Image 1 (tube, rainbow, N blue to C red):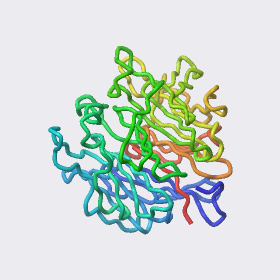
Image 2 (cartoon, helix red, strand yellow):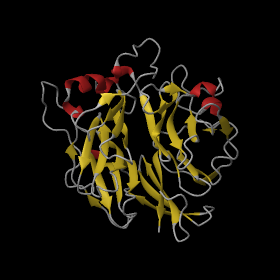
Image 3 (cartoon, rainbow, N blue to C red):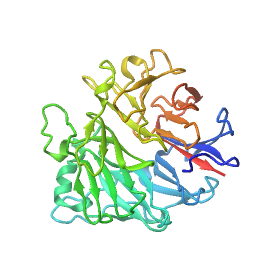
Length: 382
């Protein structure tokens, strides 16, 4: 994304929900929003992503009721859609392992600028897939889908998160398309240096739930990984067990969430990084105590920001409800735009869409009464 939106362009939000997708178009000041939708009303949309290489192609990861998981592509920013001819699907069982079926395509990542047709997808249960024709046909990618060691780390579907285990946070190093990161919930963080032909765990320093062995990759539960555009050797992570930072070539994650208020903690799902300042990032903590109610702590939602790489954190709640707001934000449902003063956006489990034009210092609700929001992406459109 450019350092600043051109004068003849505008910000749009791509909102994926439990019952369809919506597009919100901002005016130049980002003070009012025009809605386009719903698209795919009644379908589960896990992720809706714009291809930054052409600025008009959208991919939507959908589950269409009794028809199962699929993908749709639009080349005219949602005016028309075509279903994928071959959505992500696991191959026949190999290596003596039980066969698996894709329950949902959960995460979409466009490939690098030099590979205009390439997309990556992560699924539930954990699988990694690649398309080379703009998202219309997909094939299993890399060794991890059917490697016995990785299948052990992935566990069974009964071992996973309440809405299913998943592969997410597919990251392509902008300097080297052969350098990839992925995360699995559960199953840890992994890195490839050879274009996905092999992966290696990258979990040193990450904590696991008390009573479990941190030496077992299966017990590691990263929630969201982000790479800093301005400093690609820096990664941030929101984990089931804290907030972390990794500065390569180091391999040990540093827990940077210890500076969060004790009554709030550093447990949550989304992580957002500043497009130009690698020391600035934002999280949305949730109540991760006892039975994991997955609500805002104390019913008082807030974004927390760091401006010093996680050494300190500041609460940002101006405009947000002061109490009795028992929603939270899912891992894909918070994002940033590329404006000179960065805009932040998040969608809630209660169907509200919130926006900040001043890097989180104040917030406005720009949409209410949507279905549960699964993902929010910011895009720049002509």
